[in-house]
Length: 315
Image (cartoon, rainbow, N blue to C red; front, side, top):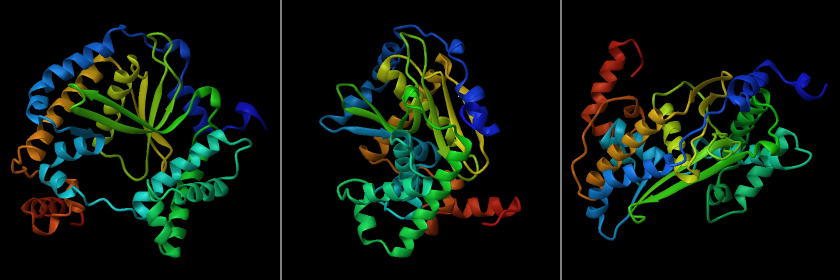
């Protein structure tokens, strides 16, 4: 079989429902990106003035944390470390990237090994230094976790064509208020390009496990960054759940972008108060309590455990 005849039903859904027809793409005002930037800079001017010579970096993760629980955000500072869990996504994305650009594309297991080799050779960035000293069992577990994700991606997504202009692990950033405030993000997969002021980009975030409430906010943040970058929004953003082959998609419009901009402003103000002014963080019991570094001595974690127990879940 070749062409569309070789595609699984799920792969066909990606083409018809997620990517859709070019004839259905919306056209936006040419000054939309400038209006969004002006609005952000006006709202954030007091924060920028308070920074002085310092800079404030606002990421997807920081926004999700500070809007979820301020104390959790503060407790996470400087705690990141590479492990099987934190490296599996990076290896997966590198393997998919190589599969999209190598001709002919190697088998998935070979792609994962190539990705591991490439990442291990870079001791300055990413998990390279950790891979150099990791236990062989950990490396084997990492290879297995990444291969599971790559195989699911290959089953569920049609082969990525270079004509779709695929971007994997694609960084997006923009400086505001004379570069004193930086917004930063990295999308798992972006396809397409705008034509004039007509939207043409699809942004997809890949997840394993169950849906989370922050997923939609993350994607709206990416949509805002893409709009600030090119002046044209993506036409759609989607979270794809590899374990189920299902997705949650949103079409992008001005209301969605305005909501994302307000969330950025509110989050940047909170980050400024916590990081620069040193305000005591507020506690908001929630799912983050289950893995927060302060869960052993935080009353919020006790409240969250009691709420879960009352609802019939394990603490």
